[in-house]
Image (cartoon, rainbow, N blue to C red; front, side, top):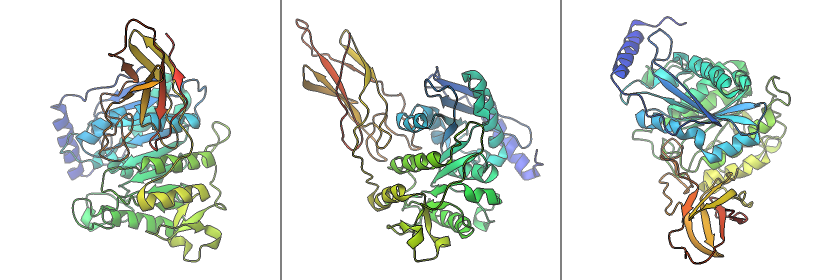
Length: 448
């Protein structure tokens, strides 16, 4: 354990005593298999996590041995922390996890609004150890003890980006890739951020694919305001790693400030490519080194990419992209975030009619997620679920989205009640899934 300074010890004592006066977060939704949850109380020991924390995990049904773990890490503040309670229930992120036989985990740190976020988003302050303990305990609860040893793909927003980047620096041998939305760890002391301790950069971290993803209104085009310092921090982090040959890119969101916007359509595709290239073919083997002969490069803050072999400028100052497919998506994303899709979503399954209520199950489209479901009675459209879609941060999605890119509460049910059906005849029903670019699935008829 580290020896804390008196000032840090005072912060630790204050924050712990402050939290002791507050009620625990609501544990909602319920974590029943294939979901599992563990919760740890705050610690008063030096160097350990001073906030309580929940870890909720989803295990893809039918997977015998997990190949990895995808972590969806919320940002700072009480609201963002509470939003982490639904992260593991996100159908779109589950589609990525299921493709690679990975679990999906979402932490929820119980940080009071005024408490110091650094006490969890810097993993050296106890959250790294708590996270790894959580994996061991969740492995025992779920019957997947391999969770304690599998590789990690990390996504983080704001303070969660600081955490994900910090974990990549602390544990590069475990991190398959890291996507940092609006937050990065500090590599060099900064007088303006004197309360944040700088990390060291091990050589092994240069082999970890990392993507920095700030919003343009966070210091790129809008340079003042609350989030004006995000881009300078990202630029410094990128420049430091890339100058040493690090596999790091930048994808500036052209529409947003600190909100997550439409980043998931780029982040999920990028993580998909990294997991495909890096997960070991045999369980327990080390992560594979990512081959760079297919890499593409782009000028920093540019909008066009070219193959690395033909890139004319300084390659150690260029945005790194793993392959041609990701480079193509990146060029769309950094211009207007309008990443397209030509494939329809999977059709709903297990459509059941009980009285006048329809229920069903559905998998999300890996490329575009789920927007809504169309309900037909006797071949005519009679409704959609949800009736009204609201997402102030980007494309409307079936589950809604909170600020830290997690489903809204309460979770939207896959259910529809037909209140206008005639009772003197038998009706036929069908359910259609629609992804976020408007493509429809095949129709699935209901069974009684």
